[in-house]
Length: 498
Image (cartoon, rainbow, N blue to C red; front, side):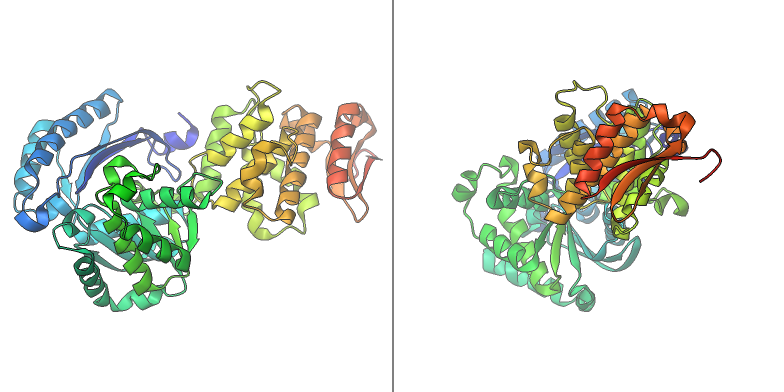
């Protein structure tokens, strides 16, 4: 267990009893960047027919009871002492919801918390904030039975609403026009939606994530990572309108549509299209973090919440995978002289790259660059958008002597401009120089300094340390200088001088 995991205690589990599915997620600890160590869902359809009958689906109840008992047993086997069961819209609204809860509690030997609509909305918004710390706009969480809409600014939650607009309920409303009219009517009552105009809509929920996957395939997008996948509103609205009109037969021909989502995907697309039309955000951002992550985030003290999830995750990875006690901050300080004019916003990406810079030391030398690139690009961390992922991955690729034009880097090159690609290359070469000079032992870097002026990039050290700058180091320095259109130099300073 890492130091931060120890600070957050042991593993923490959440069982989310939703209208369409129940899911067990076990995180390594309650901390700022918790890592899921187990994640399984069962599509039970508890809310199927709820709009018509007012009760939970009988077959869904039986399936849910069986699997809740299994989830409780799995969590116990994994040593999860902090295990919470939470139920949402279907259980909350059904006439027999309390009866189901009592039966489930008897089987699992634990209590189940039925979240109010307001609490469900708040936790969903916190989940968005946990994964996207600079969130500003509207968090929308579409479950099988309800839609939670919350005004969110960072971790501050504002106006919110819980609407009975989940796809399992909308199936019983009637045709497409009736559903659209109902959604519009519900949204029209939310006067505060005007606050979202020009900001962002953060889409949460399995059905909306399925839409993201379909759009990625449709657009030939180079990176299959749902979290922070971003579309302009006009593009998203047009696509959702298209999907909302597709027949079951048409959807079955689309390979990227999950088979179990075919029935509800057009309704999910229709709801999203109407929300986009009503709220008029500039962009739609898909979020992989929601209610369950918000539940864990809610457990954290304020100081822990304020930490950067990207940097926390990368530091955890460094502690568990690096050869030595990699100190990203020290590496960041050593390369800082050549990045004085870099944008302040890129500093956290450089720190993330420093933390990940010894990621692939165990890999075969011929494949280190490729493996390091792909792993960095696809690590399921949060707090970073897709261009940011591409930047860090390219830097790590260069750190392992990978060529910027290698075929494996194509997805990253499609997400970045020429200047950003060049900056990532410089960052990677600077890190490669640091590791060649120090062999991964940070203390060596205290005795040899990196510097830059208008014409040169160089190393300065004392005469006693000059033998540490051998031919391999000179080659790395030369590569860095060429990437920066400068001349390499090595300067010997007198002992005691800075």
